[in-house]
Image (cartoon, rainbow, N blue to C red; front, side, top):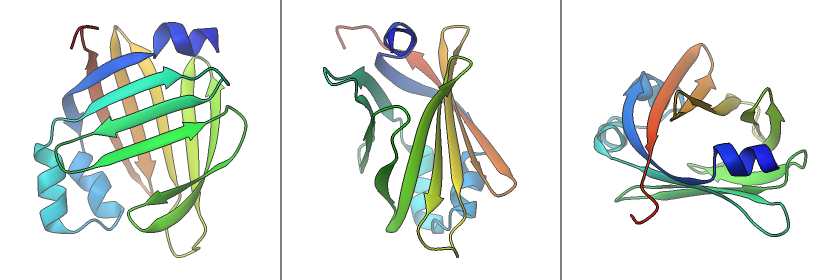
Length: 142
């Protein structure tokens, strides 16, 4: 848990993305929402609560997504109306969450967060599409 606290805890603002619209398309997100999401500048906040629950939020002007979990314990999440079971772990200094849909017609997803050269790199995978989002740490006063 100390590694997560030292590397990840804080606020991060999106700097750039690779293949984000492709990722959203593969998720089944409609054109209008894909365009809105592509223009958004989300802020992600990562914290660790007293009970060792990791809390990750992603806030934009039109939506907020949150994950709250204990490492190694499955949790449920509603992703755009699809129920998913998340399996969080830490491997080689990376926070990895594998999402398995309860509906077999929906594709599973994998989200990996790691800090590389001071940037939070969030890699999202679905089907054969891999998207990367690069975030810069915000000053603590912001």
